[in-house]
Image 1 (cartoon, rainbow, N blue to C red):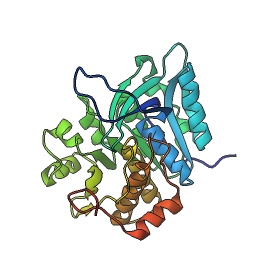
Image 2: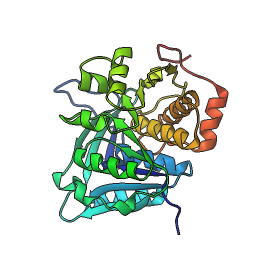
Image 3: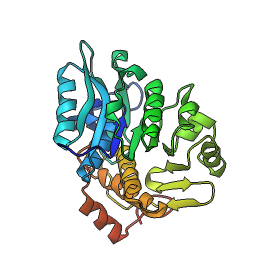
Image 4: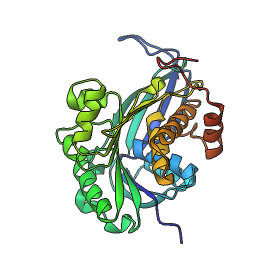
Length: 312
């Protein structure tokens, strides 16, 4: 019998089509594709794959279509060791797809995605048996809002802590923010939700909405966190960047790993930054995911980027 999951993730399960180009084209131009590859994607799904690689028992809650891409999504998660009890196949639906443009010089990726509405989860689709009775983490991506809210309630009833991968903003996103324990956002989230940059006032505004801790990822500038008492800033690690796809997802995996381990804030953020940095050494969201030994070696080496980003 497999171990009960320590992290349950609810979110989009996607199939990524990645295209490497010399540079992102200007409007109206044509540009050749230098390389292409396909692999599983999705914020929560990729984070769960990363946690499984670190040896953490994980379970996914999501939906896929009954097409070849859906079969590939499921196969990738199964191969990674993710518990598929909450992954449903929707008859007649097309699996979610993402088309990702990656500049060959290591620049920021651009994502185009499409999702069949038939894939969306509702609260009635959630089986309480998917949530363990013992302490655990619930990782959400904030898209299927009613399902996320219902899952957060179920998880908290069972001594779970809720982590939100805060990127997407909808009219009721603030309602979900109020129900999470750890809000871990990308740097554009505060602008989308609050209309302001991720400064000290924005972090405090988010914390007052409900989370006990707010973290904002800053790419090559590292990450910051705020718990109402202490503002902590950690730098990014100096790792050659091939592709940033999935870096935020893997950061969330590292953050959850640190929560499970009971680490202090500084170690947890440094570990998450190291995870995200190492992922960027390979194309796609899954290929560069490191194992524990690789993360510990990078942290021990201590090569970080200066506060303004760029190589040390």
